[in-house]
Length: 489
Image (cartoon, rainbow, N blue to C red; front, side, top):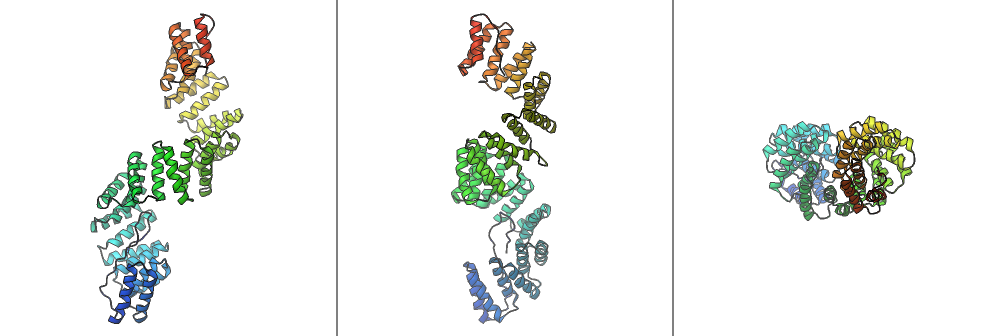
């Protein structure tokens, strides 16, 4: 009999032999009736039939094994232990009884006793597939992956075509982080049973972990054709859709999943993200609050809840969440960033400045935090420190148009026009519709004496934003050949 210790394990399969039955002929009818009822799924009826047989043969080990197995199927695990313990006392060489007794102990959470009985089953029958398989599942449950992998390999050497063993082995490898070997096991299972939904579900998750969202989508689509209303499959496809930018599709899938899995953290978290990306911030807020009910203190949910509040311009409400996030033992850099912005937007400039300083010191490799600190120094008029932090930010990530534009401004104000032009051009290359940088490039070119090139930049800025006053003023002045250029940050 197989166990159910992993998420991906299939339904219990009983493997009992009729060989060795000691009951007399008149008891066989009760026994056979019990077997028939069990196979028909009538466990209560099977229990009554085996009880009737045991009244006449109370010490028969095969009857005791069957009765214990039925009790296990009914969830009567203590009774299962009693029947199966009596079975192994009467027949200490019964590998099946030891295996099923291991399952009963496993169901009770008595894992050491479960392992002992699986190993006794193997000692009685070295090539007993189910005992190796159940022991492997148990070792995964205990976190002993090395032993688990050895047992899965032994089980598959005995029966290489067992789909469940390949799926569970793959699941264990996936949990361990060996995605390449996990994929190998899922592919083996797929060859044996291409419509195995559990394999497809785990395979889809593996592709998500590898970042192959298109492959994940294909797998989940196939699985959902087989089980259209599976909330776990809807969660998987919704996650893949979110990762590919299909936020509407993600919301559709995740909303269905949430209705069926109201206490599932991942469903609410991913749905909050997808709603947030669609600008449905009030709805996203509801789901992030639900996440915190399910997992109190979860930093990601706290930070994201603060974020959706800021998107609703509820800055003061957001601040306590960000403060809670940065006070955590291992705070996220994004929490500091969000807190500093919230301070700024709520008018608490000094708190914002101190937050930027603390964050940049704590996360010296974070380009956004260094950029935020540079902007704070720029606002305070400390151009030297601003330039230092802008350059540090760009040394980590050279793709900030804002940083390049602001460095260009500092160089422009210092009359270092060559460097200013370089940075303004870089800002525009990164963000072609960045009217501030386009206007500023025109001003730098004008100051260099390249008036026609300057006019082209001013006109370009006005094409993008016709009401942009600095570019209009600069262009009019040049056309009138008088005045001085206006720059903007």
